Length: 288
Ligand code: SAM
Image (cartoon, rainbow, N blue to C red):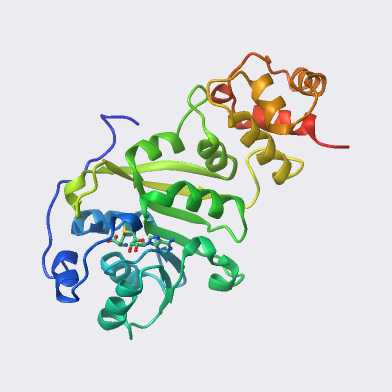
């Protein structure tokens, strides 16, 4: 992540929509186990909404509306906002504060247990969220790998996760392969812990991912592709030929021939492969 060109937002606090005073008013103590750090910096909230390029015809899926600071701004720009919150206490707060806002559908559910097509139907949508960090990877992979995919994601993630999302070969991971297969990621800006209450123990960043209808490389079967990638990354610091054999349970000869057919040195480590090379390898390992 470039230190010089990436904007950092000056920290400002609170005001009338301060999550802290709202939580106090409703007698709610934030739960760390649910990743509850609420954004109170108006500049950062505005930048997230701006990055999503919203118009009245947009449907937005917001994961974890919390005390509703981002939700309010989304409702000002988008025609429909579907907000999914796991914490019943916050659902009650949101019903009290925003319950009758036109365009808002408030859903009490765990996003990882919810079928996205039941939420958004078959119409295009954008995903905008200050994500709960304990499940960032699971949420990103789920919305990238399983249709219906959003056309755009604008999310707040840990700064270290933003770096992994945008990694180049040499520092690739399962997450960067997943993001780069389906989308183009750009860094909107970095955020210091003081923009949240309670402040998280890490730096954060806003990332926008533009998602394409088709993967950036031709892949035979996405399930096979990710089975191969997962196997490749399955054993840290191991050479590809060993982790693939262990992860896929195939004879060494089959693995070696596939690596040769894909033009990949068997001694390479998984983090050095590009998405194109993973696709060639998955093709060589595909049945038929
Ligand atoms: N959007 C708010 C903001 O920006 O201030 C809150 C963001 S806070 C980092 C994450 C939110 O996600 C919390 O409200 C938390 O309760 C909610 N959350 C955590 N796990 C969730 C899950 N599995 N499904 C839906 N919401 C979840």
